[in-house]
Length: 170
Image (cartoon, rainbow, N blue to C red; front, side, top):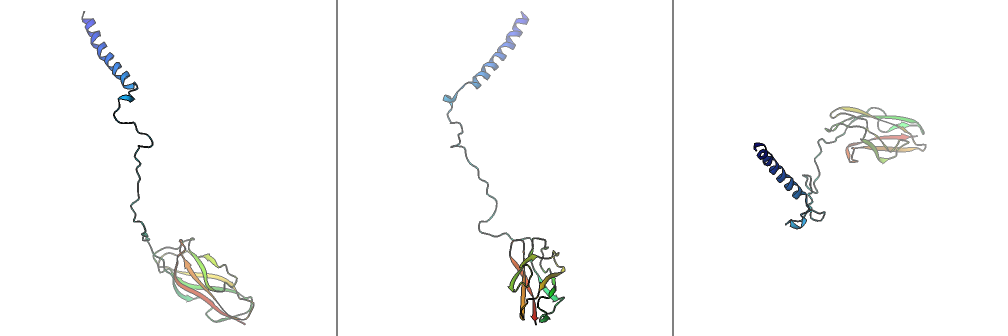
C-alpha cells in the first residue's frame, strides 16, 4: 500500500504539469485582452546622433601655408621661348594639419606654361619647411608671363599664401 500512495503522489503533479503545458500551447487568441504586435502597431525606435543640425564640426587641425622664398628663377627672370623652367619655392606648413597625397596645388591665375593645372602638394608635416617644385615650359611668344598657384586641402578648400613665377620671355 505504501507503494501505491507514492505513485499517486508522483502521478498527480506530472499530470497537472502536462495539462498546464498543453493549455498554454492551445489557441487562446480569443481570450487575449490586447492584440499581438503587427507591423502597423509595432513601435519604431529612431536613434538620432548627438549633432546640431546646421552646425559645422570644428576640425582637429587647421591648414596654413606660408611662402618663404624663391629657390630658383627669381621674379622677372628672362627666359628663351620654349625653355624648360624648373621652378622651386621654399614654403612652410604653418598650420597644424599634416599634408598628405589628398592635398593639391591648383593654378589660380595666369598661365599654366605647360604644367598640369592641378598637382599633388608635396606632403609636409605641420610646422615644417618644404620645397614645392613645378617644371614649366616658357611660352613661344615674347612677353611677361605669370603663373600663380594656391594650396587646397582634402575637402577642396583653399588655404595659405599664393605663390607664383613671373618671367620675361624674349
